Image (cartoon, rainbow, N blue to C red; front, side, top):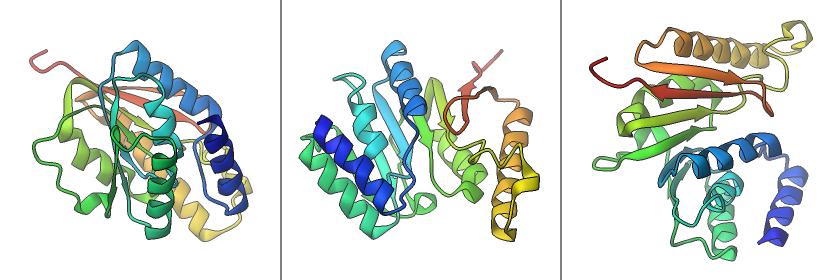
Length: 198
């Protein structure tokens, strides 16, 4: 398992594939353990790195992860099989915004896909949360550019940063969730659904 994970880190580095930072995934694994999380939905599998590590948090957790890039999807399936985790991790090859998960509920939803669609992902998938469930979002610092706009060189990067700022504002103004922001890795938010009827 450790060898596969190291191999994945090298592959991601060589092929310029963004994978979650070590401190961020450690935080999520700890959250899964401490809160007895049983079902996780991940938006954005990439090569399966974070799904495999989340599955390693406890033996009881099951993960559904969605990836729309075919090459990455195939790589994720291959890596998950290598780790013998195919019984606990299901990889869905599709655009997350087109996936229908009717009848499924999750304790934790992890958003780590196209930054420009964060609000859309949140609004679509929050309906699949169990009571007391949590939505964790990664990359809210976006390599430090969110707090250092002067160093942004391109229009497309400026657009991504604007959308991340909009998402942060959306979370802060969302009356149904209490969101905490953590200066961990590339910046994480943890949004916990408020109890209905309060």
